[in-house]
Length: 434
Image (cartoon, rainbow, N blue to C red; front, side):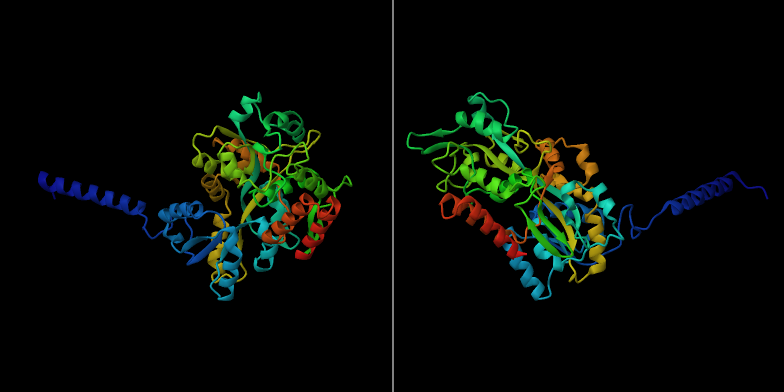
């Protein structure tokens, strides 16, 4: 049958439309199908931690925008002072979280509540290859107690104007340079020993924001064996080292010299307010703080001409060290939703999430591969270098340890005990906390 031109045109149009429809159907994906990198819905997963709310929530918001699978994942922030009581009360009422995001400083006290990751599923050599050295503190004798994600190393902030005025264009690289070369020029005291400008805030404990971190840095640099663990048993070795020295005694001796009016290094006393406030007010030349504090210092005084450097080392040290806080995501044994929490644990323990959290928190990702790439952030070059040399130790209880170290420094400063007795008492009291 011969088709008229009009009928032929209709046939051609229908054929073309049919082919187009087939092509569209073959490429169509239902909106209900998972997107690339998506996960199955995990239900409600609650994360509690001591990182600022906006840091974790910003990452969650991005993930929820990407996929509804994360709709039930929530983060709740608690300050270090509030965290312990809040968690204990919640667990007692059976309304506790599924995951924790806290530093190694709470690992010992929380260990019995955390479900470890067996070395059969995550071999110990892989942990060493994946994470910076300090992160391996979460690898205890019976498993890995969380996926490490962040490092916050202790660093040195220095006032460029104060140092330049006294003829120093670079910060001190070692303690000897600080105390022997820079200190005499930087310190400003009246004839009666009244301090008009401090060099460093050391010696006291209550008004030194990071006193624990500074003392820990000194004992780690001194080669302390710190605390060892085997089968759940902890052995305190802060006063021992491979060289046979007493690192804690040396650290306490050096630290307290800066608060003794009779000492040439007298630079700080209990009459001063918080050391970071003094630094921001330009009444303190050098402030020892964590890498994450840089942005906050800048915000509090935009006109402050300061920068960041690694913590000073010993002049003869062959290995550079500083103290660091290492954060990890851990799964609680009491999780109401262990299946969903395990999925989120794996997701949030990934390099991608660690990198996002690090950028938002002003910290460093715990992955060796990411640290080796460095950072273009204003403070990143130094914090990334410091993260690679940072270590921590198995603290039994942050509040208790702070009180013990505070008492130790006060005993020394007020001559209630001699140096050896004060340090020995601190070790004895620490041992009882485990």
